[in-house]
Image (cartoon, rainbow, N blue to C red):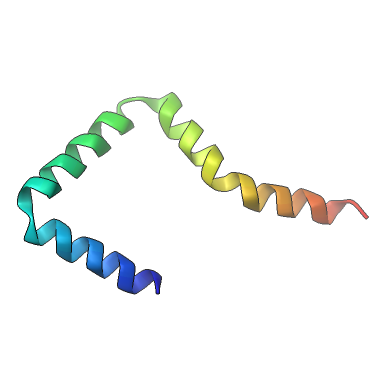
Length: 58
């Protein structure tokens, strides 16, 4: 399923060049802000971390 979604997104970005420029611009802007990258990484990793720590107790 993830391969299909990634392929569809990649196909859409190639088919609509202005959308590709917009996505690349947002990605470059976000990567220029290290605290933002760390915050997004924390949000994405939080469910896995809570499952792991919950397994340590009981």
